[in-house]
Image 1: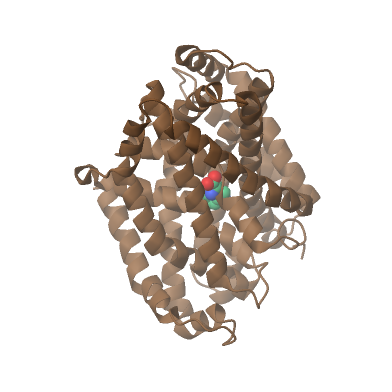
Image 2 (image 1 turned 120 degrees about the vertical axis):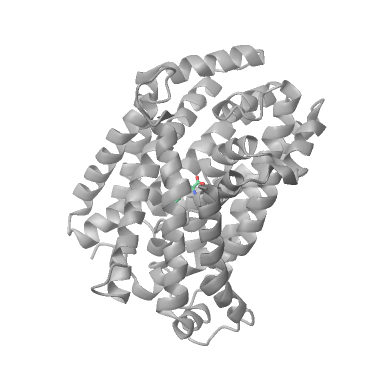
Length: 444
Ligand code: TRP
């Protein structure tokens, strides 16, 4: 069995955090927050992270480590001849869908690296930067080109298994991303009129909490933590028997959430200061950020470094997505790693091209009035991830059961864990109930 590509040589936290921290934090989080009531969304988001983040992540890691398999093989091992492997299939399908639209935005980060290096933002006002952005995302072929390049780089890394190198780089680069976000946050908060943005972010207006805000926050938590899809089952399968799963889950959850909140602190004060509509969506990041760089000393260098780091953060996430599909092809369909990678990447690229083109103004690639891009995003974050996560906690709570759970979380009794009973209670009762209730209210 070929499990030596990505992961086996990686520090688990670095790999899992690399998967978690990506465009979901810096691009998708502000978009969702802006469109779903600002501070109310943040509050709900943090509550869900607190109650569900660690338990769901832990459940996935446990299934993976116990079986040492990909998501489908894992369920098949634990419950042969049952319908449970269907959950694994949904996960692999989810990875495919997310890859397709994720790489569109990942491609944009490359365009913006080039723009940044060419100093194309300097001295421009918001209207011009917005017009340039609009022109770019209406240039279908250019989006497709960048997207294809991004998928190609991802496939190259997954195929070559140079993850070892990626790990070394991301251990330096990701903390650097954090530092840059802090610097940008300070600059953003000191812009004139920034206070309004902080208010928008941190003052929850409880009347704004609706079913659709709840489901958006739930979907965003799963998306951002890479949960509900099998990525963490796959990573769990690489974790050593003496690693502490609970503390791994906790550190990944905390660092991912920190990056998301920081991204909010960077984007919203600046957006309010420059007069960008918080419901703007895509423009929130791609137009507001260049404006911040224009307002700071050394803006040129920060801008280049920032977009490079954003592209790297996206890359460590797409690697994890593609790896799920490739691990399934290799281990369950017995393909060679080379063919598995080529076929998986080509499939993602084909769907991805339509997703990219669907963002052009007046594009006809729509489903029920939504662009294909938004439909794929909706289907994965708000439907597939919650459903898969629901069944994963149900599986650990009711099928795998208490003694196996205690065995995994304490490494067979070696670790002391006084709150293991509480965590199990959450996994068995609270988590499935919370996911189900939010899911139902979201679609009523
Ligand atoms: N979590 C990543 C981000 O925030 C995206 C991602 C990678 C993902 N792998 C995933 C989302 C698996 C859901 C499931 O950018």
